[in-house]
Amino acid sequence: MEPIILASGSLRRQEFFRLLDLPFSIMPALIDENYGDATDPRGIAEDMALKKVNKILDLLKSGMPPWICGADTIISVDGIIFGKPKDRDDAKRMLTALQGREHDVVTAVTLYNGRNRSINSRTVVSTVTFALLSEGEIEWYLNTGEWQGMAGAYKIQGLAGCYVSKINGSYSSIVGLPIREFYVMLRESGYPYGGNQ
Image 1 (cartoon, rainbow, N blue to C red):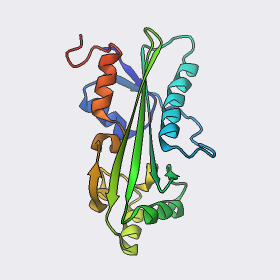
Image 2 (image 1 turned 60 degrees about the horizontal axis):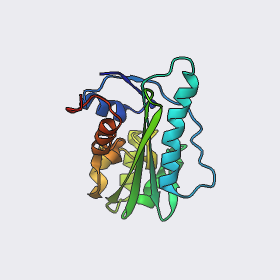
Image 3 (image 1 turned 180 degrees about the vertical axis):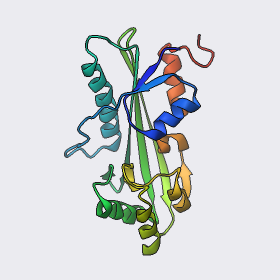
């Protein structure tokens, strides 16, 4: 199998690639993640995933790689979009807003096939419900530092799982890569995987 460039420094996505036994190299796409005045979580996630792929293509102009994967996860509640917190206070603001209610987790994935220069994209929207949290619980979680670099200031596969009362949708997508949809993308794009050889 040909290696796929993962345009992300996300340890979660790397773990999924290992789980899927896919050969890959890591090349984080350092893009500007400021989405300005945009308010559509789905559109923002899709735009960011595509920008990550395009950033790698720009960096590798002379030697076009056969495969690149970009992904992005956005969290929203009441039309307010939560990306990665800037600092502890920002993380506290996010966790306070999310506690005791449901929010959307949007993950977009873009797969570039350098053989025919085609793009395949998928977006998955899942919902997560947090239990009511005390001030002490929020402070405890902030003290763990687990919120750093996480959309919505939490890591569902970590200690924040203690606060999740309900999930509707794709758990792997909430973590950072919708495995089922990504598998379908690989097959549709002609990647030799899962009996598609």
